[in-house]
Amino acid sequence: MSTPAGEMPENGAALQRLLDYIDEERAKRCRGILDAAREEADAIVADARRKAGALVHNAVVAEKQRRNRELERARAGVRSRLRRAWFRLVRRELDQAWPTLRERMIEHWQASTANRRDWLSATLDIATHALGPGLWHVEHPEDWHMVEGAPVFSALKREYEVLEVHCEPAPQRAGFRVTCSDVTVSTTVDGLLARKSRVEGIWLAKLYQEHGLILPMEEK
Image 1: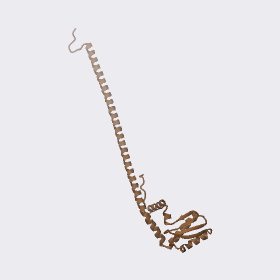
Image 2 (image 1 turned 90 degrees about the vertical axis):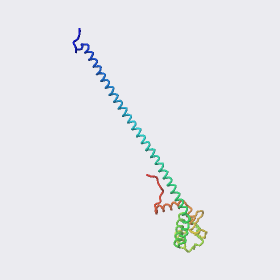
Image 3 (image 1 turned 180 degrees about the vertical axis):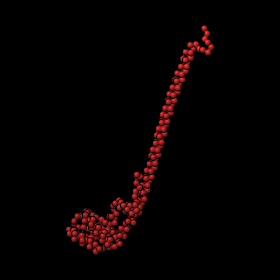
């Protein structure tokens, strides 16, 4: 039995609906797969960007740290060279100053009776703290007149009656040497300059006070 034209048999219509359903399901599945693929691709790209950003950041940080280390090494080298140059300069100045200092001390001794009397007074004051009672041997330059020191010796004997003082000339150019038993106090030029490091420390302190001469220090 034939079917009218333009009409599909009942089973044909069912088949078409099945095909349409399959097409829809396939389309849905394709869209789902594509959406999932896009999400996964987006996640992969985002993760890659994060990782790339982290790598770039780490590289920048590492490079900055490397440059900072190199800069600090360079600064340390400059500071070290400055300190060495400073010490060379100071050492040269100190070495050149010693002969001049010696001559200035002798010039001070020779300048006046008052200077020599003050020198003697300071010497005996030091001796009273370093030497015990007894016979003091006071050595003085050969061209020094004991009469200049008479007031100082008189005052000393009045204060310390147990002391005996014996003066005798010696070849030093300036200053005194006082001995009692086996202890000696020397304010001769050689004696005063014997403690070289102390003298240089005082000289450097004076330079600092007068001229602000300081040692290059580490940067803060």
